[in-house]
Length: 99
Image (cartoon, rainbow, N blue to C red; front, side):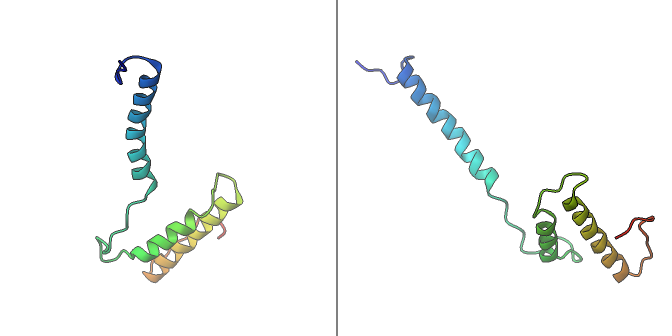
């Protein structure tokens, strides 16, 4: 008689594979699909559409330290901060750093 739960190579391989797949498939599905953005901002002054566009701009390329892409990200952030501060009438400087 064949016992499907006996400790023989075939059943052990089968059940181990089933258990690993049962654990890994949901983890992969959950982690690979990003959560959906909220329809309404929790704060009145936050523009979700602009925040999403800024995030896609910042993450479109890998930007390690001392790379050209990192300089582009820095310049983008400085220009964004400059726009926000100028719009609110706040004086500021970059302590000698060029934009």
